[in-house]
Image (cartoon, rainbow, N blue to C red; front, side):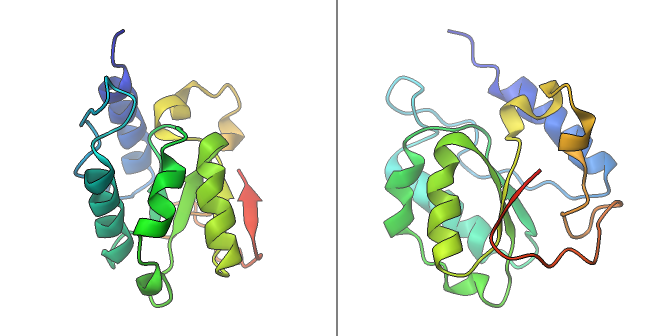
Length: 150
């Protein structure tokens, strides 16, 4: 099986940079564990996600791909820094576990494209930067509560 993640995330990074965003890749993005099922061990994935949550400059976290392993992370993370430095969590499918957990804590999330298929979506409106702070197309009036579909 060919790993298309490096190519697809590189293309998505290029799109996000064209919006005026700085892209920070998680330390485990290209890691592999259990024959490619996960992007690293549970501890590696939790540490990488915690680093993004704790980073004040990160405004949004786009998940690279789905996977039922995302639910394994929920109880291993400390969400307290999101109070002072909230950020969008963007993804769908198995990432819904994050949406539910974060929505229950009072944080907003975006049900939207993941990095792996971001540029493959035939509907360009699904790739709009309107909700991402710092992007050229950011819509400053966006203040709805809960989960949003992009």
